[in-house]
Image (tube, rainbow, N blue to C red; front, side, top):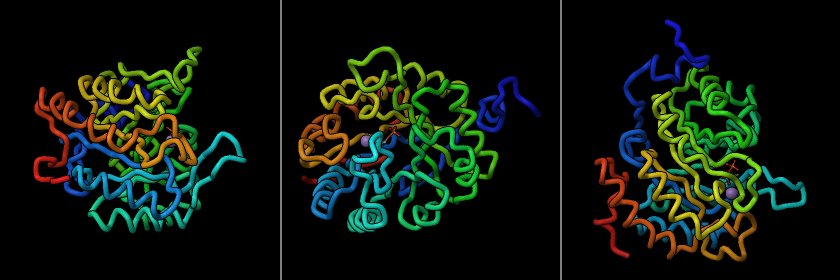
Length: 283
Ligand code: PEP
Ligand code: MN
């Protein structure tokens, strides 16, 4: 069979039903997924404080960069292996799954050891050898949209991974570059329903990179869930003002907690709840 689009395996034409896969008790693509954590792992105290707080809210997915693709070579580049160890230890203490960025092929075996979902950043969406190698990594992949990529290019990037043997791909809209510079990126909310109509893969949204502004994150998160997003990946920090990366867009812990009830209410409207059970959790 061949489809009318240039991408095949990821298209709705190829497969009509939603792709659903289970990670840490959450059926990605059916339940909504909430992934939260700092932009980067900085030290043990930081990651433990954040993880403990998130786990009390019932969050099951912990994000944290250990290998950070920074615009400047002089900015904090991440704790690398040490960061992955700290992230894994913190997550294991609370039964959480780990999401962390893979920057290059030579680090796949290390990431596979420590992370449950490998994140491909916006800058690497067109790193085709990396995408092909991730088709054989045996772990789910969170594929960010390239900041200058069209939806077709993004779906073709996903096609590289799926056609190389890995169907567990989560697409993540994170904003694109436009003439507008009042926000860090221009968030393409319409991409959510559009990509979901074109592809059977789950689509989540990153309101943190998408806006660059902490106080915009709650409103944009609500919009994404209302638009049918399969989940969110959100940066939170115990001391955003001291953060070594992306502090301006990182939510305070209380700000994150305050935002959850309304997101849950919106998620209930089309009967696709978040895959965690806040009701059972006591803070
Ligand atoms: C991040 O999630 O911290 C990140 C670097 O994301 P992006 O690749 O979307 O900029
Ligand atoms: Mn970041």
